[in-house]
Amino acid sequence: MTRKLMKRSVLVLGLGISSLTLAACDGVSVGVGVGYGYDPFYDSMLWNDYYHDVDVDIDIDRPDRPDRPPVNRPPARPTPPIAKPPARPRPPVARPPAARPPIHRPAPRRG
Amino acid sequence: MRIRLKTALAACAALWVGAAVPAAADTPVTYTDAERALFSFAVPDFWVLRTGGPRDIEDTELGDPRAVARVMGFKPVTDDSVWMGFVSPAGVNSIQDGLRYLEDIDKFLVNDPTVTSTSDTRIAGLPAKVIRGTGTRDGGVSFTATIIDLPRGRVAIAVTILRNGADPAYVDDLNAVFASFRSLQ
Image 1 (tube, one colour):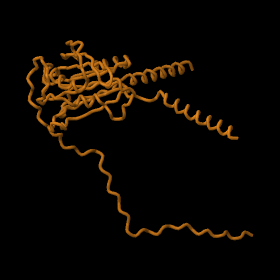
Image 2 (cartoon, one colour):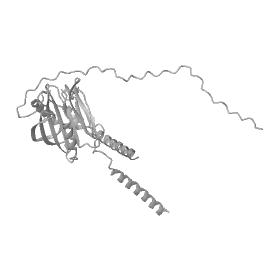
Image 3 (cartoon, chains in turn green, brown):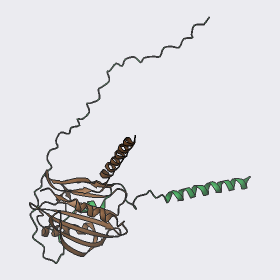
Image 4 (cartoon, chains in turn brown, purple):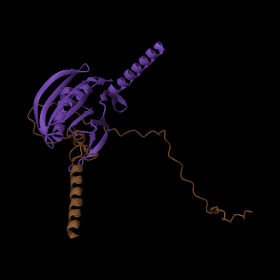
């Protein structure tokens, strides 16, 4: 009996581990350690020291640093075509009485 | 009956051709700055585009806000080994300025950049400078930075990054982006 139980548990555990191992080999997985929204090159291209006096040792003759661009605040947002939904109407204080199902009556005896 | 069969065949052929042509088309995208359209390009099929906008970002150490231009970046939907980005920073008027600008972002884009070649070319009929090189960023990468001299005192800067081991077929997609590049000034 004990032997049979051990055999069964070994079988179940083995199958479980093998299925997990097979699932890890799934070819659908994308990238390595890169989660949603993580975009290193995008963030790096945003960042620069061009308009700032940062001490960078570059030995070639660089052109003069241009004036800082005017800081243009983004213009006011136009009204979008999709309007906000109206506020949800408040329920009246007194709720109408709940419609009760008709009480089941025994059918008249059929002659 | 024979005539009907022929027309049916022709209709089928027309459907096939019609279905094949839109599948090869890319998605045109226009880069604008202050409601001024600067240039356009086509994003390859099955690539995902991320757009930005002008804004200020503050340096946490120095504490000074800096103006940031719109960056448009795109990469294949199912692959992180290729990346391409466009930016047209304000105040950068010529290819010389563009080189200077690139020197200030390359240290963020890749580590230990080594320029292997530079060349002058024309993209969409406009003078352009191409800088190719290699560097590291979570593994080896090869990069190509391109400065395109747009009319009326603007430049377009395109940076493409290919990680080592990326599918070489992506090079065709990247070159197709340059082939679709048009100045809108």
